[in-house]
Image 1 (cartoon, rainbow, N blue to C red):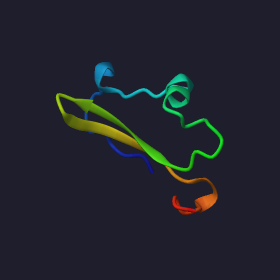
Image 2 (image 1 turned 60 degrees about the vertical axis):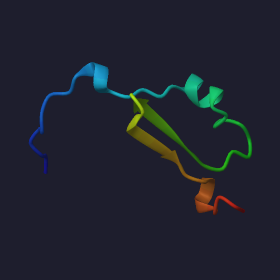
Image 3 (image 1 turned 30 degrees about the horizontal axis):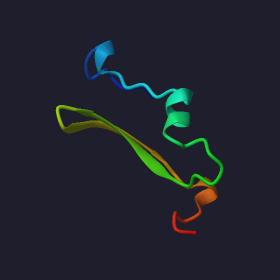
Length: 61
């Protein structure tokens, strides 16, 4: 069942993450387990995306 919109989105507020970004940050290298990408504005975190470890493995394995 759908939900009512909580308001209009402003395109400038949308976060983007491209394959080029993931490559630059090292997330596409073999053996990369997990990590977090953060967006900030004036020192405040405005968004995060977490990359879990593959196959549910612990990050220290």
